[in-house]
Amino acid sequence: MRIHYFQHVPFESPANILSWAKERGHTIKGTHLYKNQPFPDFSSFDMLVVMGGPMGVYDEDKYPFLKREKVFIENAIMLGKKVLGICLGAQLIADVLGAKVYKNKYKEIGWFPVNLTEEGKKSLIFRDFPHEFTPFHWHGDTFDLPKGAKKIAFNEATENQAFEIEGRIVGLQFHLETTKESAQALIENSQEELKEKGKYIQTPKEMLSKDDYFIVIKHQLYSMLDNLEKV
Image 1: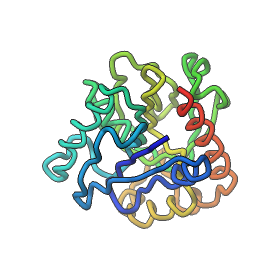
Image 2: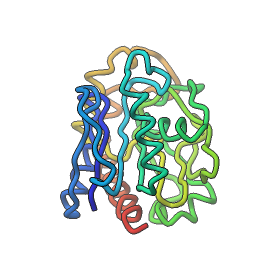
Image 3: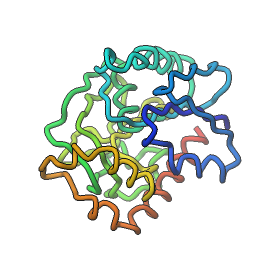
């Protein structure tokens, strides 16, 4: 399978998605949008992965590439590509499909459990997940579900944590791709957010001390991507 990813800032990479692609023998290439690199041809990939970033879907004036990126994502969906959106990526998918993206009641930064919905428990893509699991989070915005989307996961802080459309489009508000190194990069580049106090904001020490959590989400990422590949 040929995978292409969009990266919005230097410090939010695909991390373990790169490891999965390499181990499975897939080709993976990326467009670093903050460098104004050109968009790929649609014929050059089978799956599009849209990464996270500190900007919002509404920040087009500050980040002009967002407008072109939205058109590209919409066309990729229309052309039947597999599309995975993570955090900002999920919000961009929701936005291009007509759903509202807005500030969440809480910022969610760190390790917090989420629950599968009944639809999530039936999903072929998430079939290997436990009914409750603990991914890594780093977001302040959230989204309404796009038309035709199945709600896959939720928690107390964020009503819509994941969705799935037609079994080939997946939006995750949380992060499964995170490694200890990529979490450290987020922390180093997001100090202002960590100065805020909140019910769902952990300290860097709390986030980086969970070695077993990083191992578990890597296995869950691999399971999800293996299942998405088979669709």
